[in-house]
Image (cartoon, rainbow, N blue to C red; front, side, top):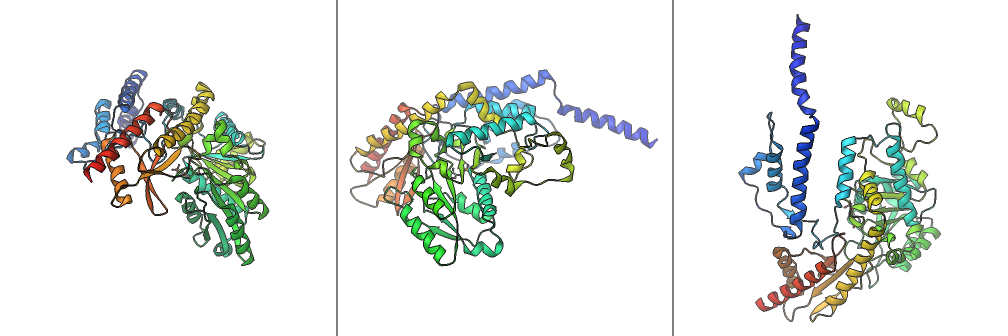
Length: 488
Ligand SMILES: *Cc1c(COP(=O)(O)O)cnc(C)c1O
């Protein structure tokens, strides 16, 4: 009797549960709606304001909530458009010059779609040997581009910050630092080191570590001689020089620290050299970039962000570690329920989980492999070289204008400049200029503060930014400066 009741209940549960498995016709309808939505978004990008001012959500925002009832996909997507995609930055615009631009290659998005549809398990080689081999091939490819030796290894991460965290943990384990040593361990950075590095040091447990801010030169690059002296002094005082962090493309202005000179010093003092190339790393793919990044191949670890320089959708970082065993030593663990893995791949187990704090993870390699395979490398190399030339073009044009003060000639693809008004506070004037550009929406630029000066940053890195877009930016800057001057 009670079994009958259970079985009757089971039938109704099954009926409801089966709604989750849609048939081919419904799949096609959903996909078509999503593709249409994506197309509308992409086609609007060229004319859309690069910054869409936020507005208070209003009562209608509650319609994004859900209950027991189904909702048609078109209705769901229209809510998405109204409440999610119509506010904030249009980062896919070719005239987004703020922070670090990112392309969001459509073919990369299709890689994500496929990865999610096939939903192969990318954490363990046992589950998807082909996924593991493809991702290892991609890690090897990155390592070759940088010039790392055959023993190098790495991880495809969700971004630069997480990659930096893994690097710091690998460096901590390589130096065998234990809690008793933490207060004597020294990290060497500059004032322009990305905050994710110190965040990683803190998360890795080393809040007590000594952080030495090494001076920079006039071009905002680390002063290698000063680094050498700092390390020697610290050692003489009984401290443990542990980690040197060089930046290959600072977020503020793209300056590249003197990597070869820093590598000499790190080697001589036997200190781990981590290179933060989250922004600049992709430039190894083009000839002038490779020259500017000389010495990067001598680091102990490095981080790159393909969601910046390889134009992939957000969620793509890479960690490389010169001595791959160091990375495995920091992260490899096993659970009893994983015993079946060994039976299949005793010799060749290169599971992603052994190089990462993650176990279950998306098949991240596909969003990179698909565009590289389909387009080939040539357009990537050209786009990167083009961005270096465009930055120089912008620099030459803007520096010729009256009242404009520029920072150093760009090492990579970021130019900093400010307008010096005839009277009044320069910082205030440039803050107003930045606000006026954002309000106009024709371009987007962000700012930073260098040695107390508020400066605007022109960062060019999107795959779809070309000379026309830079000319429009120059024209708009000229116009806004004239308007602000006239109003003063
Ligand atoms: C963007 C960036 C990071 C942080 O990377 P996320 O992918 O945003 O976590 C670190 N360092 C530099 C130099 C960067 O430009």
